[in-house]
Every structure is written in structure tokens, then in C-alpha cells.
Length: 109
Image (cartoon, rainbow, N blue to C red; front, side, top):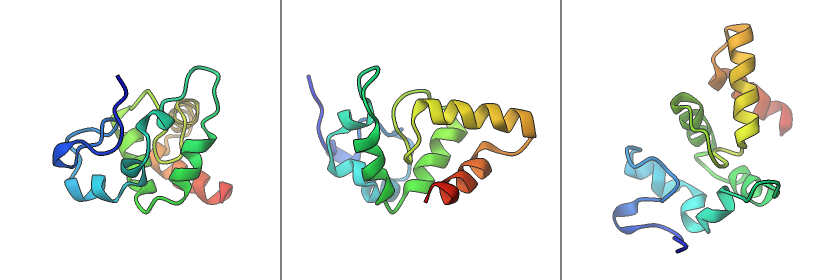
């Protein structure tokens, strides 16, 4: 069964249900197919990244995923592999992963 769009109560299937409702409502992914954010193994994450690039809450989403250790899907434009790399770099350097991601986001822009 495929779940699409926003669930009743403003809940988005791939976002943690504890997020503030206003954060969820502003997320562009709430207006798109959530399956785009969980591509099959080996499939591209670019469609999700394009949506994230235009999202007004991209940094909040990215920081949430890093802070909570989200392991699956594309969050704030970061793939599972991106987040793993950032966490490893954070452990090596002692710099918070969210700070590294913010710097990395500026470099990629």
C-alpha cells in the first residue's frame, strides 16, 4: 500500500510525529509522494534532493535527521550515505554534525 501526501492531523508518513505541526506543514515533501524520499537500493536520490533544495525548512529537516540519528531516506537534501559521512567526520573532528552539514550545504550551493 502506498501512502501519499499528508495524513489527517498534518502528519507526514516519513517525518517523526513529534515534530511541531508548523514545521511539518511547511515541508515541501508533505506535498509530494513520500516514496521519492525512500528510493530503492541503487536508485537515484536526485528527485528528492531537488524538492529539498527548494524547501523552506530544509535546514530544520536536515538538523532533525542528524540529531535523531535518522538512518533511512533523504532528509533535508542529505541521503543516508551523506549523513553517515557527516557523522563520521563529526566524530573525527569533534564538530557537531549539524554544523558540518550547514557548512557543507553552503559549499554545495
